[in-house]
Amino acid sequence: MKIIADKTSGNAQDRSFRCTFNLKPLKYDNKDSYYLMITDETGLQMPAREEFQIDIAFAVDKFNFF
Image 1 (cartoon, rainbow, N blue to C red):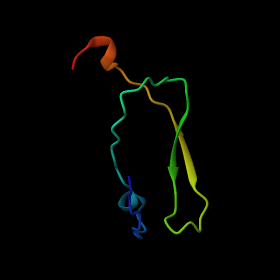
Image 2: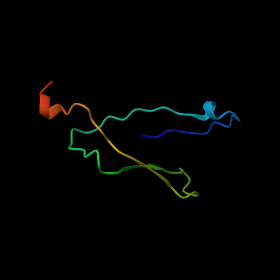
Image 3: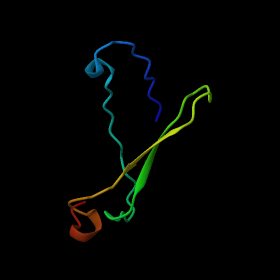
């Protein structure tokens, strides 16, 4: 996914972005760490790495909803 984050407003709320991700139907452990990599398209800045956990309330394979 590519997000062009080039807003220059002095207000932090104006520079916020929201996006959604569709997870592949895999097993995710809520105790494991996953990372979102944020990179500069030019490659001039070091990539930022944001740690997060995935906690799925209802696993599709356990309840056979679909």
